[in-house]
Structures are given as structure tokens and as C-alpha cells.
Image 1 (cartoon, rainbow, N blue to C red):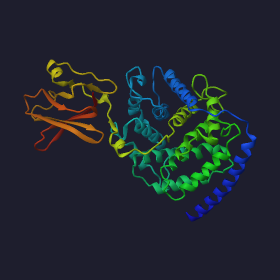
Image 2 (image 1 turned 180 degrees about the vertical axis):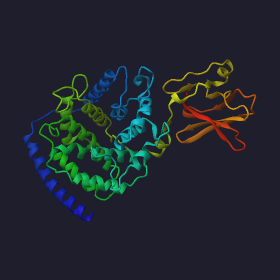
Image 3 (image 1 turned 120 degrees about the vertical axis):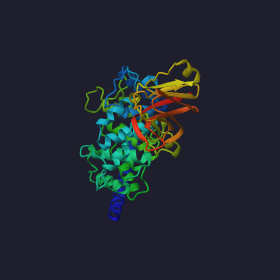
Image 4 (image 1 turned 90 degrees about the vertical axis):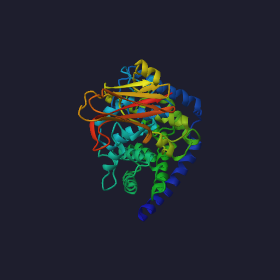
Length: 442
């Protein structure tokens, strides 16, 4: 580690000298250019959001709808609102509750986990899966989190997801792996600028670890030295957008000073429909670059990092997602005593059930369960991981057709779980699979 510090310190001094010369030269050589304004950034962000809304008018979500989970939320969009549901009344969160079953690679699991957290959902209990545990379990003995194809990006994404939730993993080994990986890059090879930049997001969470501050300085020097006279990195909107989003994680205000020219450059790259081209798309829309444009512009507008550690309250308030598709036809939900007496049951949407009376009644048909055993239901109402209320209803065998539980709840959004049991008093036995759904109390 000491050797790394000396090498990094020496590099930092060298880069500082180069940087000084570059800035001094640029101050006299670069032509005057109007500074990008917050109003221009706001307009560009609205245009790229409109691009996604217009392009996905029917909202047939696909596995490529992942960075949008992060970028649209950072842009201020509520992805659980009716604006962002598909033609079957499902949200992107609902889509990923099933799609994530096909995912095992840590980087992709991390990307979904980050999207869930930013939209208020708990990645440690997402439709019964703990995505962060699956990431942590795949950490190699050398500290690597990721795969062999996009190693730096996926490793950094995995670190970010775990750090945002403050989930336990071998941080020291992960940091050493990332720094060693970055030190293997040749500074003059511009192909690595994207990876250098994206690593800043992960490093911002672990600044207390050895070698991190020196690596941050070296990355910043490398990125600054790689800028062209027009403000671009590699004359490439992809890399420039990636860099702007990442530099903000260091606390730098990229709307001011030398970075403003880079902001001006990316604004000139945006196409009329709100999307962005890449350096290789012949002026046509690049979906990957547009994703970067979405979250980079959102960062520029908000002025804060794209990824931040959750506060204790934010972590506690995360919603445990349970798909409503699991709900049995044998369970009915009622909004208050009056509707229960009238037999007027509530209907669910992609967001679950909504009740306004603050009284929730659930009625479970247990007539098909074994007649020779006493039957019981345990209804648990949870906010995050905390049980807010619960009710147990038990009946004798032979006479039981339905069991009903009533609960009074304050305003909020809850996960409701109904468990079916034979005989709670002695030797309780599971009678059938549990039923779960979401309830919002107005």
C-alpha cells in the first residue's frame, strides 16, 4: 500500500504540472463561448424525459429499461404514477419483479437494486429475493464484484448498490481491486476515460479507505487533461456525459468554471426529439448515450450526486415489494365496515389496493382446506420491515367457510401478508401458500 501511495503521489504531482500548463494555455487559446445556463439544462432535461414518454407511449417495458429507473427518478419522475404504467396497468417496478428472476450477474442486479432504492423499494426483499445478498455472495476472493466483460463498470455498480444500503461486504478488498484495476489503465489511452469517470461514483462512498483520495485526484487530472478545446472528452458525447455525471459526485459544481464548456458541448449534441447520438451512430439516436444524457442532465439540474447513501429513515421507509399477481381469488379486500357489510369489495391496480376509510377488512375463503382441523389466518401489515398491525382469526373445523380480519391503519402505504395455518395453539402447520399485496391508505 505504501508503494501505491508513493506512485500515486508522484503521478498526482506530474498531472498537477500538466494540468497547470493545460489550463494556462487554454485560457488564452480557447475562443469565447456563451456559458451554459440552468434554464438550458432544464429545457434539455424535459426534452429527454419527453423522448422516453413519447417513445414508450405503450410502455412495453424490456430488460433494457434499467438506467431509466435511475435517471427518470433523478429527473423528478414518479415511476409508480399512472403516467408510467403500461397498457396492462403495470409499472416498470412490476415488470422487473418478474424480469429480475432471469438476472444473476452482479452488475445488472446492482443496477436494478439502485433503481429500486431510488424509487423507494427495498432490494433486500423484492418479491421475496434479497438482491444485495446475491451480489455480496458473488464477491471473489480478490475483491472483485462483477464479471469479465464490463469488469470496472459492474464492480463499481455493485459497490454503489451495497454502499447505498450500507450492506455488509468486504469493502477493503473491493476498493483495492478497483484501484489496482484503474492503475492498470494507460493514462494516454482515451478508451478508458468512461471507466475512470464512472469509478468516481463508487470512490465517493469509500473516501476513508487507503489510496482512494489519491486515486480520485489522479482521475480528475486525467479527465481534465483529456478535454478538447470544445469541452468534450474524446470528442464524444458518451464520455462527456458520463464524466459530467461522475464529476458531480466529487462535490464539483460542473455548471461553473472550466466544466461549463463541457455542459455547453453536450447541450449542442442533443437531437430534436430529445435523444442523443454517440460518436459512432452517424448522427442518429443512440439508446445508450441517451440513457447517459438522461441521468447526466438530471444531475446537472439537481446539482447533487446521482448515487447517495440512504439515511436511516429512508432505509426504514423502503417498501417491501410483493407482486399482486400472487393474490388468491379466495381473498377479498374491503374499504371499511360499510363496504364490508354491503359486500362491495375493492379492486386492485398495479399499485395494489387503495382505501379511504382507514379500516381494512380482508375475507379469506378457507372452505377448501381440511375440514378435520382448526383453521386460522394471520394477517400482518408491514411498513418496510416493521410490523404496524396484525390480526389472528381462528375457527373450529366443520363450520368454517370464511375468516375475516379487520384492522385500523393510519395514512400510508403498506404490505399486507395473509398466512394460512392449521391449529395455532398446538403444532401449527402451514395450510397453504401465503397471499401478499399492497394497500395504500389515503
